[in-house]
Amino acid sequence: MGGAWAVARNLAKATALFAVGCAAAGALGWALGGYRLVLLFGAAAVLFGAAVYWYGDRFVLGMLGARELTVAEGPGLHSSVERLAARAGVPKPKLQLLPDGHPRAFVAGRGPGGATLAVSRGLVAALPPAELEGVIAHELAHVRSRDVLVQTVAVVLATTIVELSRIGGYLQRALLFVLGPIASAIVHLLLSPRRELAADRAAAWLCESPHGLADALIRLEQVVELVDFSANPATEPLYPVNPFVEEGLAGLFVTHPSVAERVRRLRELDPEWRERLRAA
Image 1 (cartoon, rainbow, N blue to C red):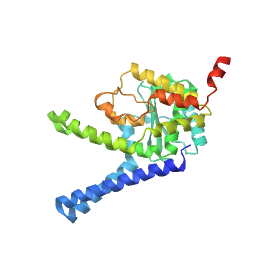
Image 2: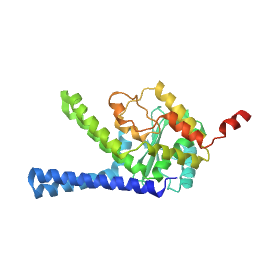
Image 3: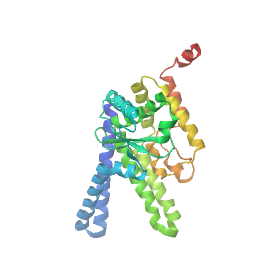
Image 4: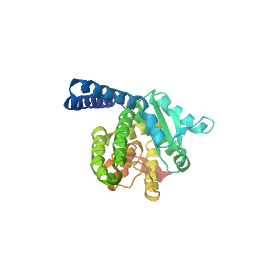
C-alpha cells in the first residue's frame, strides 16, 4: 500500500508547486520593478511556501474548529489509531476532535511524523467500530503515501483564494466568479481521484477486510443527503466522501470518485462475500 511511486509523485508535486510559485513571484517582481523586486517577491514566496509547509495543518484545523482529543476523552479511539498506524508503518498522528455532529474525518499536515487526524463527534457516534476503523485506515493511508501533504497545500491555497473574494465588498460575487475557477483549477491540478481509490485499497489491507470501509462510505453518503453541511467548499478534498451538495461553487471542487464506484471496487477485493453472507 502507498508505494514508493505514490510517495515520490506527491513529493514531486509539492516541490514543483513551490518552484513554480517562486518563479511566478520572481517574474512578477521583474515586470514591476527589476531585480530589486525580484528579490523581494521571491523572498516573500519562499516565506509563504515555508509557512504553508510548516503551519498549513494548523490553518486547516483552526478554520474547521478542531481541538485536541485527549486519551482520557477517547481511549478506544486512540488505541485504534495507534494500532492501525503501527500496521501502516507510520507514527501515530496527533488526534483532534471536531465538535459538531456531521460525521466526517480528515488528516492534515506534512506526512508521517507531522500529521494530525481530526474526527467529528458525529462520526464517532454514527459508525460502528469496524466502519470507524475503515475510515481511520483510509486517512492513515493518505498519511503514508504523502497525499496528506499535497491535500493540505491544495486546500490552504484554494481556501485562501476563495476567501480573497471577500475583499470585493459589493463585488464579492463577481470576484468569486473569477477566483473560484482559479482555486478549483489548482485543486484539480494537484489532486487526482485515483488517490482516493488507492487509499481505499490500502485501508482494506490495513483492516484485513474491505467491508468496514465500504459500509462506512454508504452510510456517510446517506448522511450527506439528509444533513446540510456548511464550510468553505475548497475543503472538499479533505473528507472521506464529499459532504457538499454538488452544485454552484461546491461543484467546482469535487475530487472524489462516486461512492458507488468506490464501494464496487472495495467489494471486488473480496469476491466471495455474497456467498458467505448467504451462508450466514
